[in-house]
Image (cartoon, rainbow, N blue to C red; front, side, top):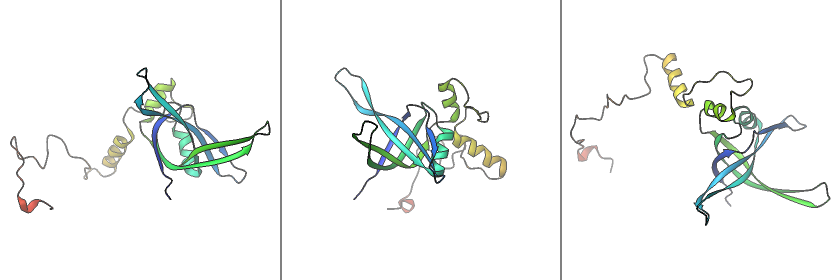
Length: 170
C-alpha cells in the first residue's frame, strides 16, 4: 500500500507551533494549492490542504515560514475523528508532512508580509542556495563550486560540440 503526497503551495496564515504534554513540537498550517485547470469562468481555483509537522521539522516550519510563503511538502494523508463540542463526531483529513521545503528566500516573505519577521536576523535578497555558495567560497577560497558561463569547459569555440562514439555511454 502506498500513501504518499507531494504538494506545492502557499501558506494561508502563519503556522501555529504548539507542544504536546510530552514536550514534542507540532505545527499545523494550511497550504493553498492551485488546481491545474480553470473553472467555467476561466478562473483558477485552489484547494486548501491542512498539514501538520512534528519535532524539529515543526520548529523549523514555524520559525521560517509565514503567511504567503511558498512551500513544498512531502508526506502522507492521515484521517482522524473526535467528538466536537456539540457532541457530534468530527472527521478530519490532513497531510502529515515528513519533509517541508522552503521554496523562496526569506526576504520574499518579509516583503509580502510588510516587513521582517520579528526576531529574525537581517536578510539580503539572495536565495538560500546562493548564500551557501558564497559561504563555501569564503571558507574554501581555493575551491570553486561553479562554472562561469564565459569559461565553459565543454565549449569548442563558436562551432558545434564534437563528440566521438567512444565518448558516449551507450
